Length: 95
Image (tube, rainbow, N blue to C red; front, side):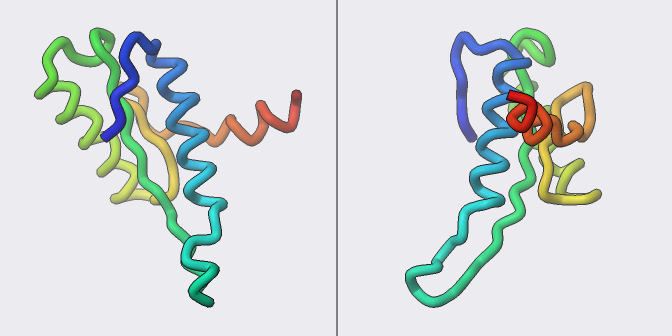
């Protein structure tokens, strides 16, 4: 779990997309002669947009993460939005 105080939902989604991309593209355990590919499933919920309680936020973020795990994996989902399209790669190539 990562907390991003005073961060909008939109900015939180950008952080989640960047972390997802970094984890997905990093060659893990390469120095040990093993190439492990990690496919992260990330869920995001935002206060107070999605919930006003910490229990509610945790539940919604967990629910979003399991939506990813139970469908295509290797993606980011947000509470009340579903699985997000991979727009980070498009945004970075446009700049």
